[in-house]
Each structure stands twice: as C-alpha cells, then as structure tokens.
Length: 389
Figure 1 (cartoon, rainbow, N blue to C red):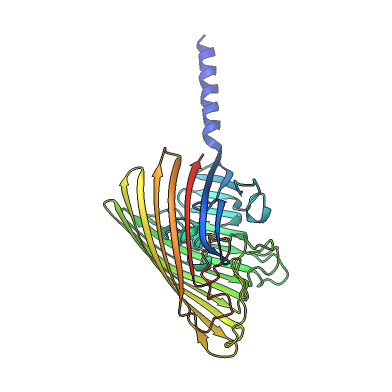
Figure 2: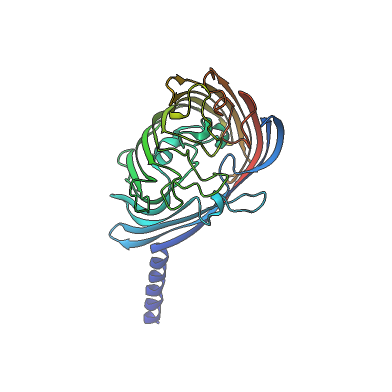
C-alpha cells in the first residue's frame, strides 16, 4: 500500500511538472461598431466597421521551460474583419504577428519573425491611438506608425527585462533580397515606468519601404492596408510622457517623421505640386496632448488634441507647410471584465495648405476614414462594442 501511494505521488508530481513547464494560450479580441463620416470623398457615410478601437484578432501564444530560467516563446496572431470574415493585413494567415524565440527572466527576450517595431513597442503606448483610443485618434495618415499601420517582416528583435522600471530593446528586419539595403528596417526604443510616471523614446528607420514583397515593410495589395509610405527612406523618432494624478492621466507625445522622395501612402496618393514640383522630402511634426479621467473602475472619459505641422519640399525649389488640427473624445464603459461599449468622435481641420493644392495633402484624412474628405475638414463618430477572450 505504501509503495502504491509513493508511486502515485511521484506520478502526480511529474504530471504537475510537465504542465508547469509548457503552456499554450488561445486569445483574441472582437471589436465591432457603426461609424459615421460626414465627408468621405464628398459624401456622408454610415458604415459597419471592424477593429477600429482595437484590431479584431485571435491567436496562440505559448512557452516551454528549458530550465535554468530559460524558456522558448512563440506567438501566432491573426487579424480579421468581423463584418465579412475576411483575413486582415492583406489576407495573411498570421498578419499581425508570427514569431518564435528564447526568453530569460533576467536577460530579456530574443525573437525572430514578423513583429512590431520599437516605436510601436515603446512609444505608442503613451499615445491615445496606441493606448485607449484606437485608430480614429491616429496622427494624420498615421505618419509615425504609432497606430501600428505596418509590421516588420524578417525581423530579429531583442526586448530587455525590466530593471527597476527601466526597459529597452531594438529590432533589425532584413530585406531578404540581393540588394541588402532595399526595404530593410531598424529600430530602437527605451521606456521607464514607475508608479504614476511613464516616459519613453523610440527611433525607426526604413530604407525603401514597400519596395519588394519579400522585404521588411511590404505593401502586399492594391489597397495598401499593410503598407507604409512609398519613399526612398522613412525615419521616425519621438518621445512621450504620461503622468497619473489620482483618477486623471495626462499625456504629451512628440513625434517627427521624415520621408525622402515620397510618392504615396496607404491612405492617400501623393501628387506633385503644380507650383513646387514633386516632393523631394515630406516631414511631419506631431504634438499630442491628452487627458483621461477614470470616473469609476468601469467608466472613463478621455480627450486629445494633436497639432501636426507638415513640410513639403519640392524639386522645383521652395516649400509649403500645411497644418493639421485634430480633436478627439471618447467615453468607455465596461459591462464586465472582458466586454465594454464605447462612443468616440474626432474632427480634423487642415490649415495653411497654400502650396500643396493638388498634392492630396490639402484634404483632411483621418486614418480611420474610408476616404479623405473633399475639403480640409472631416468629422467622424463611432459607437462600438469590444469583447476579449
């Protein structure tokens, strides 16, 4: 009898150890809502839209304990459209993320595959669109990728552990072509988070994005929903701060985007200026201020304002500086720990567009809108429901 109990106890301990050593988790999120746009190419539009506050997705993630504090990690994450069941990210099976790697609690994590860049990892969580607001609150054209418009393929990424609230990391994405410098990307980021204070900075460089479907940043379809700007080079850097006082969180983020010889973006084509010629460079300086108030554990309201100054340098000499003013509001109520309902709205106005008439930059273009406006103003509103599992 004693032998039998001993064998059972050993088997039970072994079984528990096996379960503790490896795990696979199914996760996901469904975001659905009704949008109103007052001016989408000159017409009012009512439309069902999926994944605006957060992209609808499902995925698998797992770990396996290798011993001595080292683990294997992986994640396969799929984006989809609730309205028609189609795959997101231009039909890729795991278009949001797909990676495998090694993780150490003290040394950090090294992963390989399709992943987020350092702007998305470190800086975007301090913005409204990368945190509680979603795509409708993106900076014009999501020019700085803080809304995660594109991922990077063929990427090797390192993310440190947290050392007293301080963390850092970086990624390098290969071009996967014989021309090593075409469509490659590199990024670095750093973040400090301690109590009510969060501070972050990040840098991203992409050489010839969208040049070749096998490269780091690939526009895989005609609609360009997985692409960036088409340019010889795209560089983004920025920094931000969030500070919480009681129930109020205040935020400020600055980003700078510099595009060399741009020709277009996924949200709008870019034509040559009749007076300045084709764009030799296009720059955006984004200044975002935000406030969020947590009325109760289940109810919050937030607002933001972004001022964006563009600089269009033409090949014929001279430059123009269009300005964009964006205002946004959102109220969110949690029905349960996994389900919430929300209402949000934004308004964009383009000012000082002299010199960029005919380029497409004179039109208001919310990154969440179906189409740019037919003038310099655009209003959007959305009511939605979000369920996590």
